[in-house]
Each structure stands twice: as C-alpha cells, then as structure tokens.
Image (cartoon, rainbow, N blue to C red; front, top):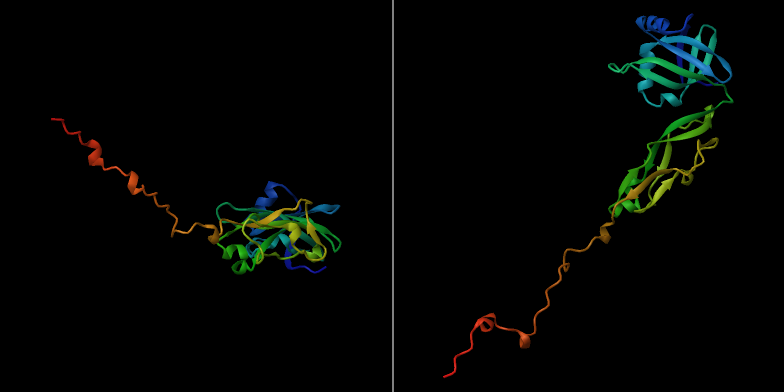
Length: 223
C-alpha cells in the first residue's frame, strides 16, 4: 500500500493520562490506532511533524504510514485534539486500514465557472449550502476535492449531489440527494425601470372644473 505521509513512531508501553503527559513532555504526541478488527495500538510520534502535516490541510483524508521498528501500521486519521492556546496537536486517533478498506471521508467542494454562471450574470448570488461532502470510497480512490460546475445554473436553481459525476469507486455516504449550492436573488431584468414608473394624476376636465374662489364667494344681495 502507498502512504502519502510517513511518521516514525515508538510504542507506548502503558496507556492513560500519565503516559500521554510523559509523551508530550518529551516532544511527542500520543497516538492510538484502532479498528478494522485489529487490536488497538498505542504509539507516539513527533509533535512538530504531526502538527505541520495537519496544518497543510486534507490530513484527515490521507493514508498515513506509522513506522514502528520493523512494523508499519497503515492508517487514516479519525480524530485530532488540539491545544486550545497553541493549536498544536496533542492527541490523535487513527483507524487501521488495508488495501481493501472502504472509508468515510469529508471532501471539500471546488466551484467551477462561477464567472460564467447564467444566474450570477443576471444578478444572482452563489449560495454554498455545503463546503464539504461526505463520501464512501476505497483508500486508493479518495479524491482531494469534488468539482461543482455552476456555468449553467440559473437564479432559483440548485446543484444536488446526484448532479455531480463522482470518480470511480466513490459514492455519497447517504442516499439523500443533498443540495450542494444554489443561485439566489432577483434578476436585473426583473427590476422595474425608473423611467415611466410614476403614474401621472388624471386631469380634471376643464368643463367641470370649479374655481375655488368662486365656490367661497357669497351671492350678491338683491336690491
């Protein structure tokens, strides 16, 4: 199996908070590898290297090799605990994998042709309902991202997960046809024009018009 990242690891003979604190004091991060019907393994890896790799992005979707002596554990990250002040990784949980493993991953969405979108050109706004999508795939087929083309999307229309052609061996983790993004707003050509928008008041016919002064005048006294 091909790993995207490799770490040199050491075995932690004991587990628990005391062992974890001792690992951190020595510049290491306590790591647990579990799952896939294998016994859990307690390891330690270099804290700086793990933090640097995590901050590069996409770490949770990468195949990792944990080399402990002559033994290599292939795994994928499942949970990372960060220091609330320094944001350095303080603990990591990994899941055992092999070449036949099918994993659940969250992959970012990349929007294509926003500048060519029919709806955006008409004055609409792109609304990203989801920034990531959860997928099921083999470890050899994990995509870095999923592309969403909005060139033909008009105002009031949406792009669903079923509208996307996913790579071979990749499928949504749930059957529901999720909305990924939409174009919202009102089209420019639907707005009323300023010119001629006001309606002129109807003129009173001259024959029926009354002089306000005449209406207030008193009739002349008869002699």
